[in-house]
Image 1 (spheres, rainbow, N blue to C red):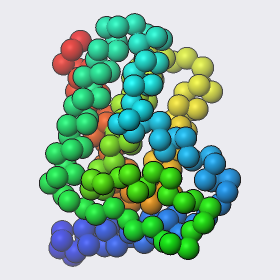
Image 2 (spheres, one colour):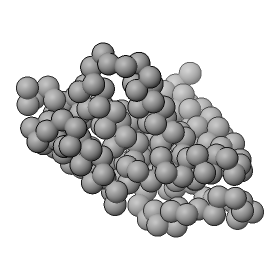
Image 3 (cartoon, one colour):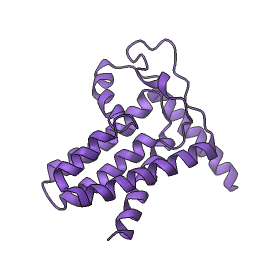
Length: 180
């Protein structure tokens, strides 16, 4: 099987599985995923930055801020390179009226929100170390909720979220490695 055929199959399953989530409607999921879907958007990214600054000091927050800028630059570059259109929401969905989907005007691949969530997760876990396992699990679940929420609200496909997560972790690791 050629590499192109493998990518075609991956894209097919990515779109198919994402469509299952796009077409699902649940008031509980809508309420549960609304806030995680918005917390790492470019308009609200100041909140996690303030949290990191308050909790861990200015030196640590400068590294975090550089990682945020790097991951934003990388996601913007890849969005312009891949030019993958966003999923089209189904008009019959009434419980999730696409609160913020109509404000998303750029391309889909990769997810900048997932990149920011991954960057935050990296710095949070790096600072928290081997602390309370419950807090660590909550941080990981929050990141997974961001990814699921972006798919649920028809902003992204699963692969967009995975690539965004990879960009976020890579940029955080790279900045942390270079500035230590």
